[in-house]
Image (cartoon, rainbow, N blue to C red; front, side, top):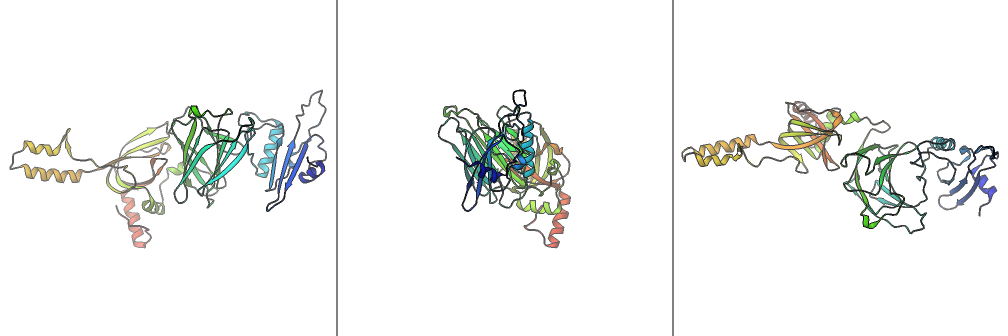
Length: 417
């Protein structure tokens, strides 16, 4: 039971509103919390309904320790992604939410919420539908990688209800994140919390390539993902489940992300930092480029004359020199004993001089990469299992940066190439 007068005082309802029903509970403790339940009946404005709709969302409290729930009979995509067009009451509520910088916590179905923290940056909540009266069951796990947990993986088997995954770095920097859904995932959809509505990131029937990255930017240093299962209970025998991993990169705080940031030349300071911290650093030529439109990436085929660093075997050296399809050393079998030593010495020297490391790295397709004659220093890191170039510059430009840094003593590691 709730005292109507106390609830009205707590929420400050407009005295002219004689149709909206309210009920409030105040929880006392370390943090005082007000929980307000509101019911706004449907007012049809027909000949048989002479009531006046005086509901004003501005009368609702907006404190940090307030939870508002109820049935407003208002529809809007912000809390119901199946709603294509908002009605007048929904717009009123959405404008109030936007004005007070509040966000709805549900998508329109009943739920109960359980939350866990993984590592430093990953905060996961499981919201399971309870309308069926069944007990809450779940089977999920998460993993964070790296000292700053820039990458994480979430696996949810036999999904029911919804998972809310909050990406909230401890140092509160803005970031741009990309996620990759594992092939074979099914039984759920992924959304990212956007401005006043959820935006679909991935669905198994969305018609896009399985390996395509789905990218999004943070808002105010954080972002939230929703993994929602269908309304019906999951069938364990159906082997449904979804697994995805994400990778986040810091961006300039308060600045809208521009996709061309991926393509601009790196500064001298960025080149030095990338040289010392990248997963791979090589010097070589770009011999060909393949543009993969379905993945939104371009593959660069590189012949490197020097591999300075690589954490995985991206670049491999030929095992031996060949003439046609035959190993060059077999030519010695057809040369007289007198000239055979000289020939083998020459082949050995030629093999050493001709050894080139060959590998493939990637850049965003919109950067318009192409092959070139000159030598480049290519630096990058592994993102979601793909070696991505983060900084590239001509070998002559690198030599200038290297010499300047060594003279000034600003290099943070031993510079080569």
